[in-house]
Length: 334
Image 1 (cartoon, helix red, strand yellow):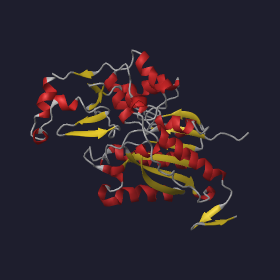
Image 2: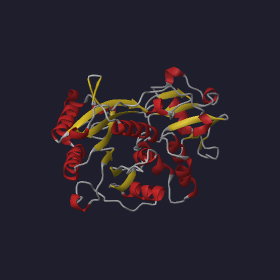
Image 3: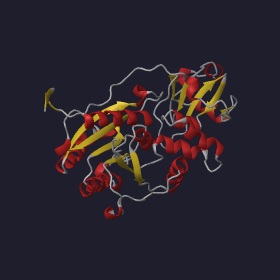
Image 4: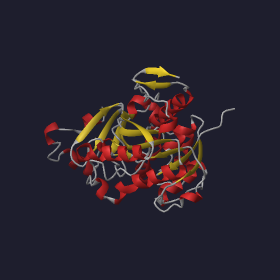
């Protein structure tokens, strides 16, 4: 029996990356999460109290040995939603702590995830700097932007993934998973028991529809109620409609609505987890545990990794590890 690959879940959030790797037989040996509410959710989901806390303060020598690192390192400093301060923001420095852990633990592989905005932040210099620092630490780095909707969940969510292999063991055969086209059944991601209804006489929503950004569209509640299986992005400014799928979930973004059976429903935490690829047995904990507050889980889901994408990446990492050939410019060598 092959020895399972051990991984450590850094900036773990609520464990979307962990689930994706465990589906490939990888073994989690610990995690690191600084936010106490998020850490509590992780503990409820996995019955796991091995949280090492703030990764900038971890005593590396006290950590268990592991082969792989996975980290959705803080994205606020690179996101178009934030101020895009990059390395000027202390959160942008987390990558250097991760690199230090890579070197001291001599890990073999890693998966790093961040917002698409990292691609062109500071005209691409930030990404080039990160990539060079990792390469100088002894790793080959593979980079690509993937969209969650191409991997089995109805959510437009573009994220950049950096996959790394220790140079001396890399056989250059890693490939990113191929995108696929899926037909989504809206009911599979909707909670039939969702009672978070936006009443059609809601004065706040009516005023929103008549603001200067929406007035030209002449949106009427009566018409919106006919948009069956449509999703409404209830933005600060204009309203946007999506047919049968969701825009990107984000931390703090609680304005997503959908139309079902002639009613306007607010997306709840359980549904947010489903459209991030979390299995129903984990998402259901939200429904039966009074500890969870809906908005809190919505924010946490918005900050999570998409399970399906990590699962596919993990699968391709395994394929590369098991490949006994080396590949250079498309040619195989023993």
